[in-house]
Amino acid sequence: MTADTAYQALTVETLPERLKDVAALIQHVGQDAATWQVQEVGDGNLNLVFIVSGPNGKAIVKQALPYVRLVGDSWPLPLYRAFFEYHALRRQAARDPGAVPVIYHFDEVQAMIIMEFLAPHVILRRKLIAGEQVAGLAAFLGRYCARTAFRGSELSMQSPDKKADVALFAGNVEIPAITEALVFTDPYFDADMNSHTEGLAPVIAKLRNDIGLKVKVQQMLQQFVSNTQTMVHGDLHSGSIMSTDDDSRVIDPEFVQYGPMGFDIGMLCANFLMAYFSQPAHRGANLSAYQEWILEVIADISDHFEQEFRHLWATERTGILYPAALFEDQGHDSTAACDAVLAGIWRDAWAVCGIEMHRRCLSLAHNADFEEIDDVALRARLEARNLSMGAELIHTADTIADAQAVCALAREFNGKDVL
Image 1 (spheres, one colour):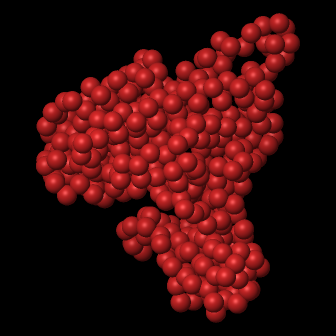
Image 2: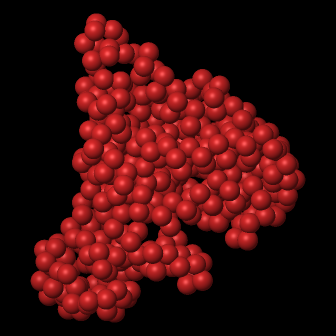
Image 3: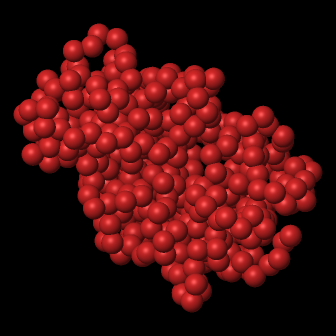
């Protein structure tokens, strides 16, 4: 515990004195706080993030701020989001061991988590912009999404435990409300905090005048707010993954809630598609090869997700859903039931994928993949392809055959001049 009895935001200068008695930090950094070196590295939208270094090593100190950092104190946010992030990390660590940073210490009053410093990991989005590949990335992400989806659901969990978890995370009200607005609603009207690249007005007008599209998006919002299939990360994108050349971890689950099984993998695939469409502004001679690698990652994530989900179906289906008593114990094959569950997951995932592709170009908090393109006309052309494919995914989510079909669609839109 810190010496403080009330919340106070940390600074580079005050952190050593305030946290000098925290045993977990002493263990991983060093006994004498006077020797600690502190660097503030938070580049996200919500939190303070410090790297604390000392003779014993390094640790991350993450502290929630009482407002949206991207906007300022005009948009207050509750500090309790750190509580839910802590509990999400604990569950993710149990459901997919080794997939998330190790937690060393949690202080609810200070809205602070002290956790493992990942090195030499960097944010995956930076690697995608730089044109770097990560070995094993698709296998890691496909298994992570399958394990957390399956093991956080009543396919695996006992019903009382699942209901208790749903009740716990239902208290995370304000953070999912951001998703409800910024992802599912704001892109489709002239919301106050929206912004977009100059030149996209014709594409945006087409989206906002498409009543059928808006109906489908709102149907997915209804799914998001009412379907508690599993515990979702809630913000799984290339900025929420840290990687080396051959190792990856998932971070930042503060948008956690119980929601549709297809939400996380849909949002994840959207961010790979946006990386794909942005590449002409970042690549030279190896443009085509690197774009194809990104599409291979999407297809392989899908394959690994399905393989792992089917494995868990066969070995860990211990909840109230699709019990063996109705199938295997009667000599019946449950493959058709698993097929139906997976079909529903992918239907939701591809719709969410298209919605996220819209959100990141039209709402608040855009992706660096596009935002770091200095040539505004080029950025608009690439974003227009992304927005148009997003609409196609939303409209056809229930008829898309598989991830290979999505990749084929991406190649098609990558060759279009939408503007």
